[in-house]
Amino acid sequence: QVQLVESGGGLVQPGGSLRLTCAASEFSFSTYAWSWYRQAPGKERELVARISPVGGNTGYADSVKGRFTISRDNSKNTVYLRMNRLKPEDTAVYYCNAGWSSPVFDNWGQGTQVTVSS
Image 1 (cartoon, rainbow, N blue to C red):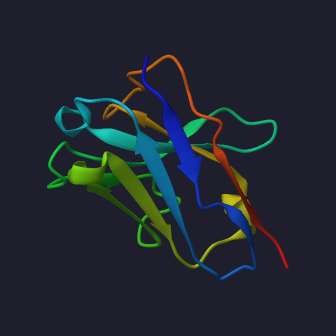
Image 2 (image 1 turned 180 degrees about the horizontal axis):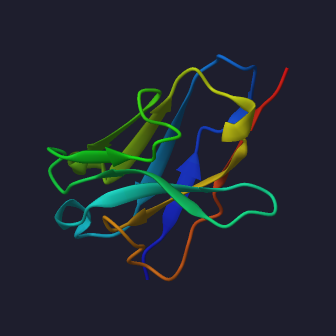
């Protein structure tokens, strides 16, 4: 069973930056596209960024385009999400999972809380 561990969240002021990290135990990590999702209180989980298996292609939700950057290091089974110019509406728990348009694994990590507030 794959294990997903997200980290790097925290409290940041509007306009600030954070870098999230997702470490996956999946031995075939490099064969999957990987994605970052987020879930705000009272809202459904949404996909915010995705990256192809070798990193050549990326995709972003309109709400984060130009502010967030997804990257990966296949040698470390790790996916990153660099978040710049954060807004209060970015406040959510952030999760990672394999897959380009829908999650591959049924089990999710604990997520990492991002709170953007002054």
